[in-house]
Image 1 (tube, rainbow, N blue to C red):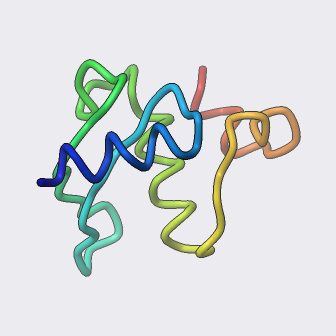
Image 2 (spheres, rainbow, N blue to C red):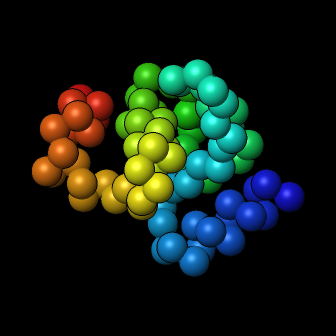
Image 3 (cartoon, rainbow, N blue to C red):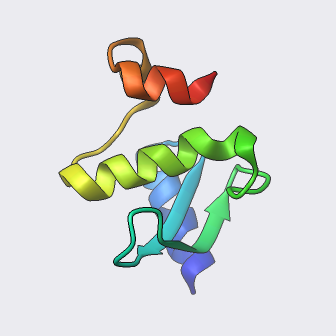
Length: 79
């Protein structure tokens, strides 16, 4: 069911990747429920996706990868 919900969201947003997760009370507490277009969100290489998820949860706003060009914390996460 989680995979189907995520697949629909990815299609609707015309996104390349998506993560559906449940946030816990801890600062880095995320339970990944479904993944689309990412190999493994726990790998250091996918740190950017996790940072975007936490940013979206914190602000309640969509985080676009284009934000990397203007947002220094996100830019540092990519490298």
